[in-house]
Amino acid sequence: MNDEVDSEKTAAKGSTETVGGAPRAREPRGAAPGDDRARAGAMEVVVSHNIEKAMKILKRKLIKEGLFKELKARKYYEKPSERRKRKEKESRKKQRKEQARLNKGPGLM
Image (cartoon, rainbow, N blue to C red; front, side, top):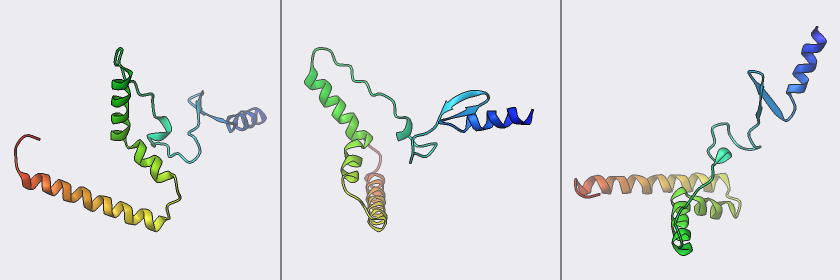
């Protein structure tokens, strides 16, 4: 009986995990379990008969999602100290923008 249980445990340690008896695919290497990039879905742009407009909408969505910024950042290795400095700089910029928005007061936003 123990041999059967041990063989089932070793079989479950393969490329899939079992959850409640059902096999589940593992996350890709280097991806955190809650990482959005690990399970990013397809993006759809529906514009009939105008490819230029569809490309423009898609590019705008990709920019808003931050894809181009991430591609540019991953082009070269960024040292951890540089990454820390960049994140601090982005944080200060975000705070300044938020403060400017609050100082502007109520109105059309």
